[in-house]
Image 1: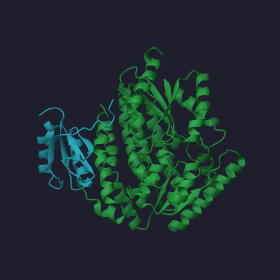
Image 2: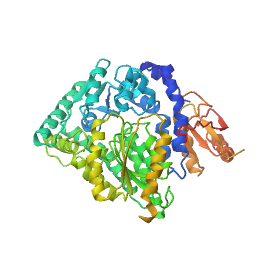
Image 3: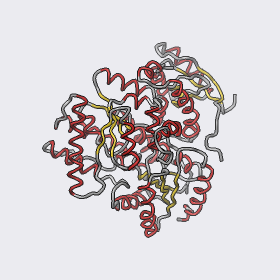
Image 4: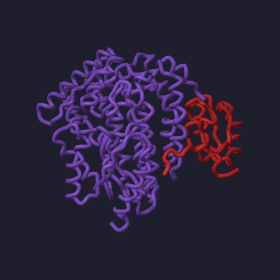
Length: 427
Length: 86
């Protein structure tokens, strides 16, 4: 086995504690992922990435850093990776999907804070995530009150840059966001010493768009009547998209899609005929948060799409590639990023339109509205979403749950009752 | 041998694992890349899991490809913890 201990030690990782985290992964992954039947062969690459989650990619980042590259850690789909990569940085989405990091987070944050925030802060402060330790800069944003205040605490330990996201989609909000992107560009240039030019930005727009195109291709295959891939596997791929090398990731997703297209042509499905098709909407699922998908797919349902940040919000819109000037490029970035419909915006009717559209496109039978505890914006928005879906005759339930597995049995009971009600074959 | 038993091939580095993967593909031997079970090693990283009945074929591949180093093949029944109990 590759010995990464020296590498982790050089990054300041708490080896003893980190080892407790490593001990859990093989069994957890085995139960959730390897227990599935008929997984596509090309999932082996993604198994590889998870198996080497704190090894191979961390070594790769260390090698890039050795050559002078800078690693930029982010927490949100609003931070434009295009700018990071154009300036010679490497963007990585940071972890925050495990219960393991919560106690360290609760040392500095109130317990009634969302688990995603507690886990992220805990991973950094407890020195148990080598991605945090590899990052030269962390980039936060103002998508919720919890995060806004957490950045102040995080800033005591490591360099943090915060992007001020407007909360209303008006023209002045657009101008403001474009200004924020410019400020971020300056920050990246200052960090890397590399100027962001029209040429390198053009390349990075293409690079990130290509990744989005690959994910779009994957998700389009989930619209098939016979599902060639499970929701769990698709979720894993989207989660990996945040921190893997973009070029390699794109290539591997296309290789998988080639296999899935063959399956689709042959009518192969990884689920039994009549399995209810579920659209999941709500809060992000950071790796290794596979809880809701696993519960759905072991209770008689199949997840066909995620209207979440670890789903279509991440890739459904591309950045316009046809720009004459750098100002045009920055405007295109602004337009693309402000088109994401996060619950931090008011009003946020675009999200309701998205959910109804996706429900139809993916031929879903029902919607599961997933919310992490203490996420006020998503929890409150449920009322309007529910009313709009009911008007359309779309069945929906809300499930609020954190990372602990104590409520798994309870959730399974609710899901089974919901699926029974959907009565998919007679629909 | 029961069907719960699996054979795990361990490697000194992921590069050797990926080289064997290439060979397994060429020889059309079914395999799965997995995190190494803790029963076998406390180092984080990949192993290749195969059906125990393919062990001999893989041994032959390794004999022909001396450049692929392994840390042995182990046939075990992996402990299951049942994280999501009903």
